[in-house]
Amino acid sequence: MDPIRIGVIGGSGVYQIENLKDVQEIEIETPFGKPSEAIITGNLAGQPVAFLARHGRGHRIMPTELNARANIFALKELGVEWLISISACGSLKEEFAPRHIIIPDQIFDFTKQRTYSFFGNGLVAHISLAEPFCAILNNLVFKAVKKTGAVVHQGGTYIAIEGPRFSTKAESRVFRSWGMDIIGMTAIPEAILAREAEMCYTMMAHVTDYDCWHEEEEAVNVEMLIENLLANAALSKQAIENLIPLIPAERTCDCQKALSTALITQRDLINSETRQILRPLIKKYL
Image 1 (cartoon, rainbow, N blue to C red):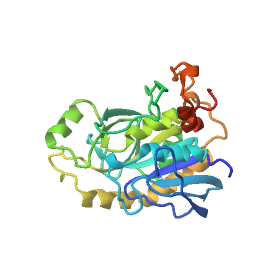
Image 2: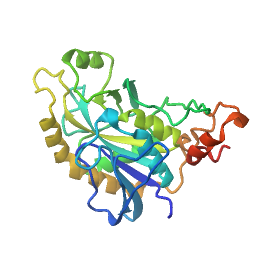
Image 3: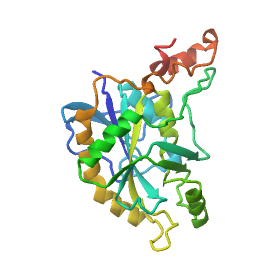
Image 4: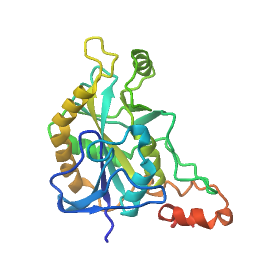
């Protein structure tokens, strides 16, 4: 099977891409378990694409329950280099209104119960996450969304919380005071693992609500979230179609060599089991 260079992870409200042609379902078992769902592959805008429903079809998996390692590892095994996350988020800024789209450039991790790395068991890696999203892919996604006519904002800080509950008003006000722009539950550890997998990673964040800080707006609830997500679902799929022709044949960013300066363990002390498990990630360095 030829490598599939482009991957899409669909969040709340986006469980399939209808315009995929020559569709196949691929079940992948990784060393970290099964992904959230079978990966759907097909052709979109003339390019092979792999699609994964983050929460499973029918939205069965909570943010903290997600097996993000299996999700990212499975996509890596298919050859994915460019990974686009479609995610719901709450807004912590007046100007980021519901149904707007944000392409964030920073993340603040406020999660508490996640598994954050592929590494361990005798192999230590310290990746740089100073810039958690690929700047090149961010720019391309911004152009693709803008072409749809949607209101889109480039840049912003996403605070990742544990969930599954929404924030208290006190928390929401503190997050605003810290300078956070949007709030969600799934960018961590996804962004970390994508960097360890040397993927270019970006997020198309769909604003569904004003969290609960806004005095003139109703506090977020599931009904509101789903209504606004469904309103933007077709738009997000059109943006992905717009994006495909913009993706270059070769990568020039540092994402593709994130592990080149990250592996700190003395090579001859890395055990054979760990070498085998992490082979798709580390084979070019060992």
